[in-house]
Length: 148
Ligand code: RB5
Image (cartoon, rainbow, N blue to C red; front, side):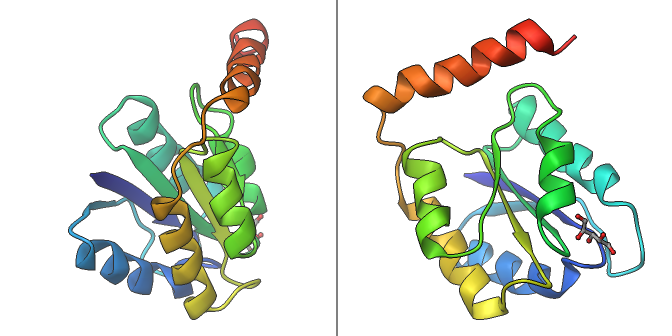
């Protein structure tokens, strides 16, 4: 598996630990930056979302101060279902019910241990399929209709 990861200065605090966790699981990491300097989160959202959208990465992780701005930006890219999560339950559910292909978190909201537990829960929870397939398909239909 390959995961693209990106952050702005507000999320940088979480990034190195998450990369270590991913590499420890044998996952290939594509680090799109930043290096901790003050940057604009949409640039990093786009870099990660493009890799997930075109299939060059299987999933993505995005980190900003709150997880909000970077997730909004990522969700503008075709095929992206980016979920901003705040705990292990929401991280697990965004995979089980929403088949989220990018997990977003806030470096000013959660600490390192929680972020790593959330990444593990997201990766270890499969999409349940079944009744959730039709709902995710409806999200894709909205995208087809309104993304021009
Ligand atoms: C940067 O100061 C901050 O606005 C950003 O990291 C993020 O929280 C935006 O949603």
